[in-house]
Image (cartoon, rainbow, N blue to C red):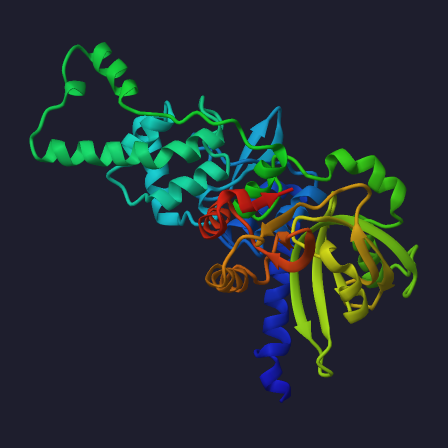
Amino acid sequence: MAEFAKYAFNKSHAACYAVIAYRTAYLKAYYPAEFMAATLNSFLGNLDKIPQYIDECKILGIEIRKPEINKSDTKFTTEYEKNIAKIRFGLGSIKNVGTIPVDNIVKERKQNGPYKSFTDFCERIAEEAVNKKCIESLIKAGAFDEFEQNRSTLLASFEGIVDVIQGGKKKAMAGQVSMFDLGSDQEKEEMQEIKYTYHEQKEMSTKELLSIEKEMLGIYLSGHPLEKLRNQITQMTTINTMQLRQIEEQMNSQMGTKPNFTDGQNVKYAGIITSIKKKYTKNNKIMAFVTIEDLYGMAEIIVFENAYLNAGQSLVEENIVMVDGRLSIREDDTTTIIANEIKNFGEQKQKILTLDLTKTNEEQKEKLRGALRYFNGDKNNINVQIKLQEEVKPCGQIFLTDSIKEVFEEMLGKQNIKVE
């Protein structure tokens, strides 16, 4: 055993890990932006891991810049501005995009110059493996914000533009000439712009823009829904995510420093719900692990049955809540909050989907029951209520999008659907 230990796990592995730990610590200390960019790239496209490391970048004071079609590469890259390093979000880490289409997009840009407009982009990548879902995700992530059209307009127009380009390619292969191919170069350029139709739309609200950005990138990057509530949150809470991290660092520190908070201490914490994972205990009681994000990062809140049932309509993703609970501090473990009560923060009013069934028949009601079950899951973002004559009753929660709303409108009629 003694001889074996000279070259096996005890010594050789320990020596290897020590060298790796020393080198990575050195890189993180002296080249933090490059180190964090490389770390982010090791989890490219993993929306569960990426937010954790971007959170670490925030702690280190490294700015993460939003994805841009003419500046971003497939991977996360570093940029310098007045000798200050920043990290540019990689296009390959946007949801539903994939690295192969993005590699083609970046390659085309590097070979033939920056994209001049959205239509220029669509024309130049028409031959590549870039589908409509990929383009839609790039729009939602804000990759085309440098161009003239807003995101709502691009979302309403991109499919028609792509179809026109693909139709033109098919005609060209068949040897057909259109009116857009005639005239001088300048005339051709002007005619090219005419053949594309943009359906001008009013831009989405800041809340909606941040919501789709979070969906695509896994984080709020260009802003935060809580920023306007910063002062209220500071006044009404007793702990934030930064302080929760400090507790863990002090608990795991060899310096003997004691945390300012104690296990079991009552605290108040506020933030926006980013995920809800429901579980059932051995006694068949419901509980949930709720991830709530404040201005400093994310914290896990444990919600047992009584608190869960009393929370009612407050437990919905993207809802801003106040948590009244107690700290659970354990050595070598994540510090969490066990909720006593969860309620809407301040005067915030949660949107409700109202379905008026006063004039519906049994067949419509049966279809509605199936739809409510189908659109209900772990990720619910709106409360539902049913109206019968003058009586209104709560009916759980679902995940609502514009397309899902259209399903209900077709089922019951537009006049019987309200989101307030």
